[in-house]
Length: 168
Image 1: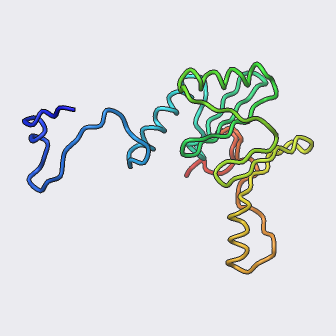
Image 2: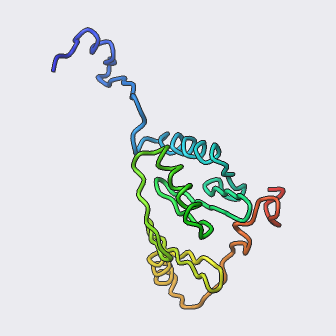
Image 3: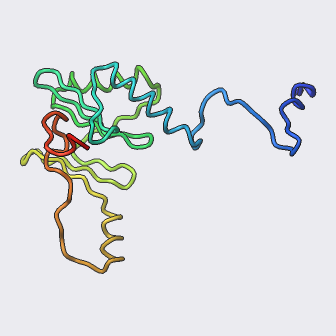
């Protein structure tokens, strides 16, 4: 490895620190999440998804009687879609075209970063829980009682149908 000494020295500051320019953002940089969100949000929007006003990390796409919903975390996401294999594959293919490394896990019960998602098809609802966090809260606050969630019952409703958050 040869180092161009003259060029190298022009990047070294008087205090010994160095100025560098990254060719691409790396995981862990403060700005990485912002740029990642902008990139994936553009992919969703360019493919007919809309970002929810209630949560900008939830994207919804509706075509006729078919619906796809994706909730994003840092570098993962949950997809729920109408049970139509062709429709589901369209959404997966959209992500694979944009991003080379896409792993898909399917099923009525999934886990991701401490969360557990269970589809209750009989009662037409999705149950999202955080079992370890729930146990920690119960233990720390020494409680055993249940309380209802403050979440809206229509959390995934179209934004223009939502009762709350219209003027917020």
